[in-house]
Length: 283
Ligand SMILES: Cc1ncc(COP(=O)(O)O)c(C=O)c1O
Image 1 (cartoon, rainbow, N blue to C red):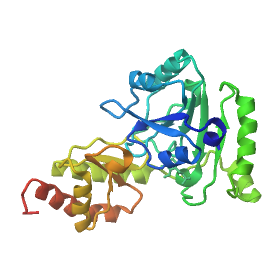
Image 2: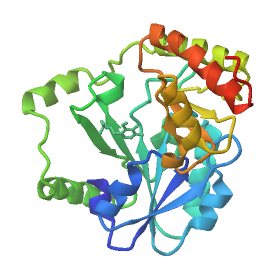
Image 3: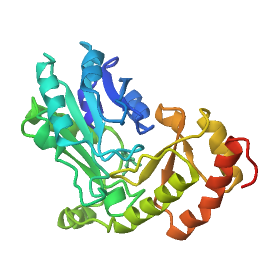
């Protein structure tokens, strides 16, 4: 709805690499052009690079924190720096804050409110993750009152909702969700699975960046070809997603949504795949 409302054909939307692969299709669906912008070394937004990518056609920047696939939680300072830069950009750029993993932050941390840090924010949220309702497609769009032209945009979104052809959640469930706004499933088991898998991968010799949030590990592959390494893991019965699909080769994405026993059962496969990439077939 937000993309349909703000884009004219050929308008540009900035996304940060690596990105949730579906963004390119959401943007293309509404005539837009995805402009990928590299993140910094630790997958955090690089404010200077984002500023350099802005053109007169730039309409929006999609932010996703906690991030799929990297698990990074963007700190408040980075969000405020982005806000400063966007205010100097000389044209209205809407920050679309895609927040389905907001309740998945580990080690006692929390995700700073993007809309508090960045004035021009539209929040897109879904209960797929926080209430474990994938496939139900129940969520909401919320426009910050500080967003330029918020009232007009709200009317445009309401109308676009009527033209897009999807079926809204039944009214009764919309009332149920209102009552459940702040409910979230327990993230502690995910944190435990993260610890078990990261500890095991580190012990094997993988270069691991422990995710601070979401429920993915974005793991550097021991060989540059992430697709070949994904195939090697599949031979071991381990299903990973190549980083190439997220715009960053040399990595794979692992998910923490499976039972702990399955994660523990996968460790031998990770070890054998790592050793064979080193030409060592002992396993
Ligand atoms: C970053 C991100 N945004 C949006 C979605 C879509 O959520 P939903 O399935 O509720 O439409 C997902 C789902 O995987 C996601 O990871």
